[in-house]
Length: 421
Length: 203
Image 1 (tube, chains in turn orange, purple):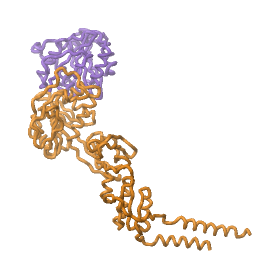
Image 2 (tube, rainbow over the protein chains, first blue to last red; image 1 turned 60 degrees about the vertical axis):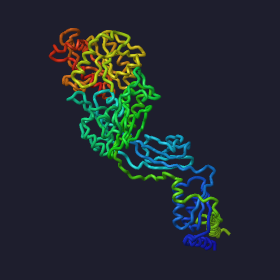
Image 3 (tube, chains in turn purple, blue; image 1 turned 180 degrees about the horizontal axis):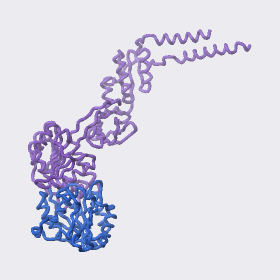
């Protein structure tokens, strides 16, 4: 009898599981109950309408699951029930153009929001959002990054990697070319160099190679010596190569330069120290004049344009008015050498040619969680009129489980105790 | 772009100004053989001065003991750390003289250990070719002094670059004449000086 009861309970449970999911009534669910409810609705009957009360932005899994319910015919609405306002933020990750690797992580967030950069192992950096976001340069070789604002984490993997070719420096033998080369080498770049030492004698560093994008990422013209290769550099830039015109070198490349090269303004005559606070304020300057209509001014010193950029064909050209920047390295303050080479590395990274190689991305991306929630579930419904409560429960109710166990135990006991009487 | 300026180091001990004609002679050679923009006159730079950093190649010579002050030593260390190069020439041409002993000790203390520079180093081919290494000087060949031909120069290396170049060959005597005198010479003996300057400007 007891065995029959247990078997009947199991048969009822099986019958219940095999019943087609019918449409129940409306259900409202809090965010804490959402995972269990979603699992239940996927296995049993889903309600005709679901209203989610979310204290924060749902995870990508919950959001996609709710969207799946909606596509399966359930009306899904949501509202924000938390005290802290929902904050929209987004993350974009791109590989840094740096021979040492790393990534540039751009986060869009409301001004003043605390943005925490993290990878799979934990937080890496944090800052307050300003001007609509924050930018992190991460040397870490993580496959994916997350940026959290409050409790919401936006995630994005590095979509591809860059092929970083050599840099080529062309100039007369002098301190400027020498210390540009040394700074870039210290930053990890492989630098080939052609120094003109005499009319018939060049000093070469690195194997002679054709100036094209197959060999070089960037050409740095330190002075008019580079004009000897003007035709090749012109073709190189139009094919996508980067070009930096340092100081008066712009005069030799009028078709590529972002503007003209004005009369040199010497630094202070009695200068012996380049201050850390404003190092470029005391360098010699060949101002960029008559910036091309498609040129962009990137830096000014007083009324003079110090740095301007321009696109030419597929390539980018940076005209840097500062000359004798080696003084910054030699005569700068305690951080002079580090800041000088980092500055040069940034200039080079801004315009160098670096073909990208896409690689398979296995990490789950969720670059803009709140935006995706709006996109998948629509805007929140204010004071939703949902009558029912969540009717979610386990597939096997507790009372049925207890009944089965008790019946089986009693049946077993009756067999064991049958001979003791 | 500022021109190259030949700089002679002034230090508080010893006779730093023992070779006053060398700068003019080397400047003449740079102007004569290369297209390097060079200032026609050199400068004298105190080793403990902030002006040291304006001249990334520094020439130092003398006969007498060399003892850097703490300020000079600290300044030279910073100068080398930032990428400066120091060329030290023993004006005595010997191996056990007071300049040699004290200067090498001071270099070791300030920059690191001196090692023999291979005679195949690019310093010997960067402009003029010296297949046998550093050119000998007349003082080495005429029996004056210790009658010793030094086979190598020495250097303190940083990576693959020369940070301090040390010579016992007495180029300060060899190059210590008025540039106009060159017209009486069959071979200009300052050509190796050109190599040192070109190396400093390009490596």
